[in-house]
Image (tube, rainbow, N blue to C red; front, top):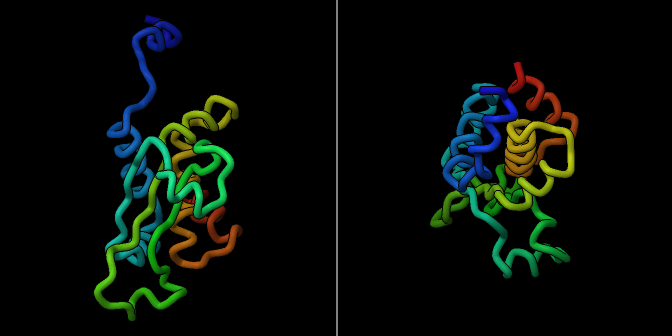
Length: 138
């Protein structure tokens, strides 16, 4: 069957499919980067909550592809006690919408959003995040 014929039987990736993509992307990140993540939790949801949309002043539920929630290492997370683990949310529907409108692969988009949100955790610059993404692509 041709590659285009394969698409006749495919649907959009599910939440669990995208979670598997995120886990694979995370596993490809440099070891030293992942070692610093500690008790980081990655979750995939269809959309941000209404509360998050309001807090982020988003005009549409499609405005956010991902979000870091918690206390970053730059803000003293290691010193905090009694706090929930840091979490990164990837939002499936906005990511799929972005994918449909751009020429990047879905895997590249998931990796980009994941690295960008982890970058917030560490207070990294855009240049640092680009370098980490490049290393994950090798």
